[in-house]
Length: 254
Ligand SMILES: N[C@@H](CCC(=O)N[C@@H](CS)C(=O)NCC(=O)O)C(=O)O
Image (cartoon, rainbow, N blue to C red; front, side, top):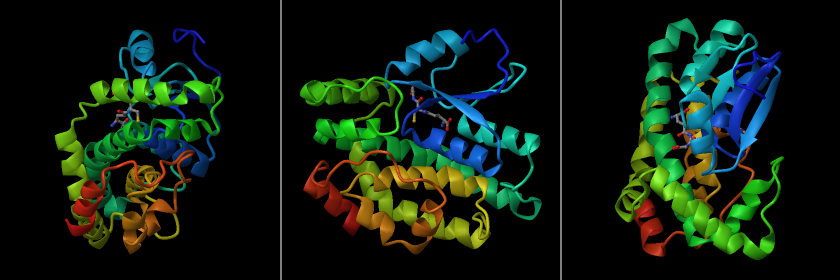
């Protein structure tokens, strides 16, 4: 599709398994907005999107008529204006929801992405599982180890991943979970239906759950479990043992 031609329906530019994309797709599903995902392979999406939209990240929403909205939080707000129900930002709790959502986008989303790629680097063959549900051609099993290492190396560069920040994110997991309790006390999360904060944070929790070394930590936390249930599980997973044992011990002991 030519980006200069106005689409007849909503299109969302995505990577299969990307957590901010999962958050937006879930919001569109809840609001009953029909969407056609346009899929890319990481990390090659970045230069393609940069040329096409002047912005290298997914998700990017193109609305019928041609308006383009970049970024999961911005898309979520735009969707709320287009279709207000079910409400993701109830007025009486909007400040708490937006604060939690901002933290989810700028802190937890970054941490979970870096940890996922660190785990894939530890077990590159696990990248194969993230192709489930993808419409792109499959990477053959025979080259999966090398392909996983190449893709992880590209993602390390794009996301500024270092062994120091991986260690720091793992050690911060107990603190991240405490933060969820604080946001919950402020009223950021939903009960009958999810809020924008649930979707933003829940998508990162599902990505952390895809790292089997870390899943028990998320599942042991009652609020994290509640939030994660609003989102589908990640299409893939990285078997236990991908992250160094001493790192995982850091997360358990803080
Ligand atoms: N925080 C933004 C950024 C999203 C983002 O970084 N997406 C990743 C995939 S999960 C991406 O496109 N990375 C490409 C890059 O860093 O160039 C959002 O929620 O939309």
